[in-house]
Image 1 (cartoon, rainbow, N blue to C red):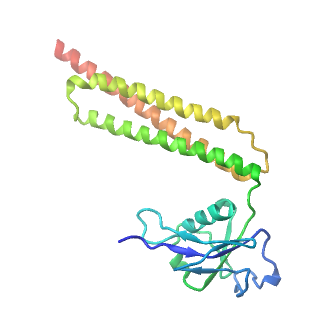
Image 2: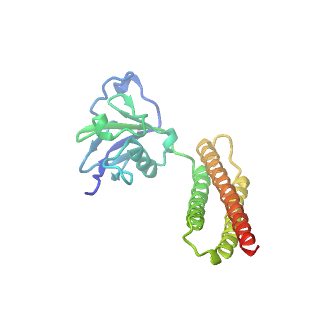
Image 3: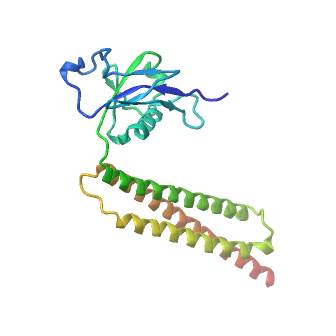
Length: 242
């Protein structure tokens, strides 16, 4: 059974709430144009005077949308980065990203507000570069995962003994190539000049660097395993020769 999506209507305001908006702490959000509808069937996200119809799709393996799904779709539609969004429902901020929307009572006729500023065009350009690099990192990570599966197959004896030495040699060359690709991306990231006020870009860069460092650590582990398996195979062959 396919997971149910959710169509959302949100109004975007780049300023904070004022007392005149009728919201104080966790008070009631009045029914007025600044507070949009959230519907299960149809709706939109408003950005200033514009509105965008959005479909919030649950993550793979989930039966219904969560707050993070809503926030990601809102980011794509409005340009307000997820870390700087403030989504408000009935006067309460939607802070728990893993909470199902239904658990918050978000359904037909409910009202949600988005507060947050868009990035400047200059920062958006830098963010696009980082997102493109992130996609490249994910593709390289897929190569690493495939390599690990092949190594596990050798370790578990799924490859004929007489073919293992050559296979391990190829795996060693491939893991070195993967490391080189990760290092090149780190070098590209290092060339990006991000001003202090490009907070979203700087946060994105920091997260991407940490992700690459984790993959490089995984590469080191795989490389060590290949060396150990090669040494074990050589020792076995020498013992058989004697």
